Image (cartoon, rainbow, N blue to C red):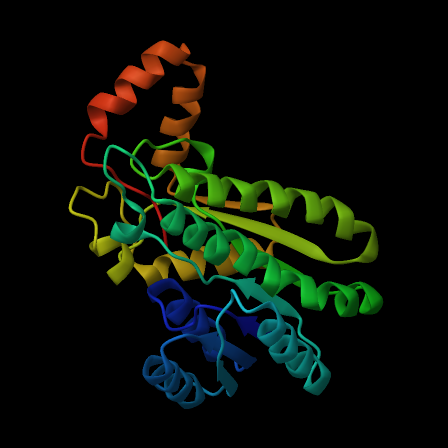
Length: 257
């Protein structure tokens, strides 16, 4: 099996790469940190995987297209994991909200960058009538947090996009899984100066994602505690919900990878 992963130098992407390396897969890895990219490539080779790695910025549509189409031409990609993203302290904003520059950066990386990852391989996968696309969103996609409005919006856009292309591609034999995780214990989430309830270690999150992908699930949502709390919040009157959010999240948090 050939697995392509973006953001492989981050905490979650690193563990996803290690997980599939243990199964002897061929891996195509990308990331912006060349040193860490070399490190994870060596680790995965040591675990038995054939690895090709390239430093690519997901906001560069042409570079992403070139990397992915070349990787697919060499060995058809069976599983594409669009994992690269920005989060943590970088997306928590002061009371006046995001600057226009920060808002654009968040959307360009999280939303447009994911689309730059997915779009190049859709024609090849639909032609072969097989393959699966995994989009890493966030449980924050289901709720508007006052501390990270654009981050939540960028992840909500991914959730809707994943649902739409799943319905579009299903008749062509291509599956889509949208992952909506809560807190994962990575450097990104550790940058937040606030509690991280029900925080999962990254290896546990990677295993859960791989399990749900193997089962062909449309959504992979965890932990269940946050999932049900957000579900309950949706049942409250809007005014009460707003008051609770303001009182509970004064410092701000953003569930992310």
